[in-house]
View 1 (cartoon, rainbow, N blue to C red):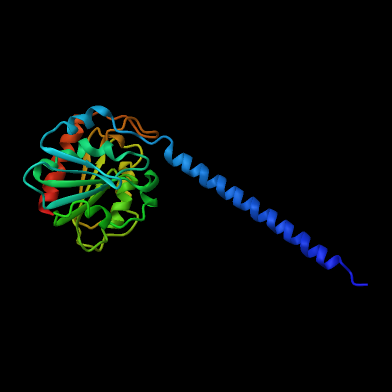
View 2: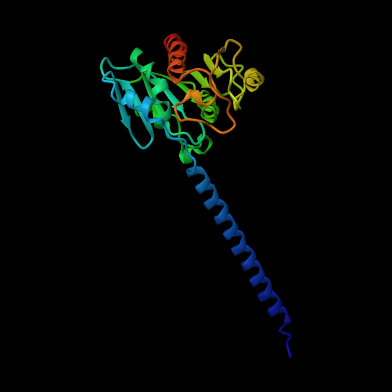
Length: 255
């Protein structure tokens, strides 16, 4: 009579394998769920005052679409544009006020809405955002914090005219390129500290323009309140907006 031990052993192995697989899938589902919750909890919203001031400015047109917030001059058109990427878990609207100053000089600004509020999960190409302003002929890219790291990747596109960093630095090496770069940092930034900015400078072109804004912290580059791990700013939001406009406007004009 034939032994049945082999079929029983095979069946038992299959049950064990199935349980292991189901356990792994359940664990994976929990990890994914936990990450999605984390990515959508604690997102830093725009402060209402600075945003409202721009929304009521008749010289600026704001268009809010699923991909981005687009700022453009209400009259006169625009041939130059900046695609700007927010920092991690910061709403696009939080940068509207600080970037509104350059719109008056004829620059269109496209502030992206990254996937899951995190730039490194956003796999959409640069054309997704430049396509929102088809009349613009020359494009710059920029970003704050983690958004700046993503902007450095976009800067490798041969059609990009220049790179703008707000409290940020590159992970990829652009030192051999002739790309114009403007790096704005804060003297009291507790996250992208002056030391980190200095250490990462080797990955930028030798003629990069570095500007440290005295009294600015990490969160001052937007209008979204206090950020964990940051230091305290000693300049006001209005002063910060003036600094950004004064430094950014000539860079975009000359680039």
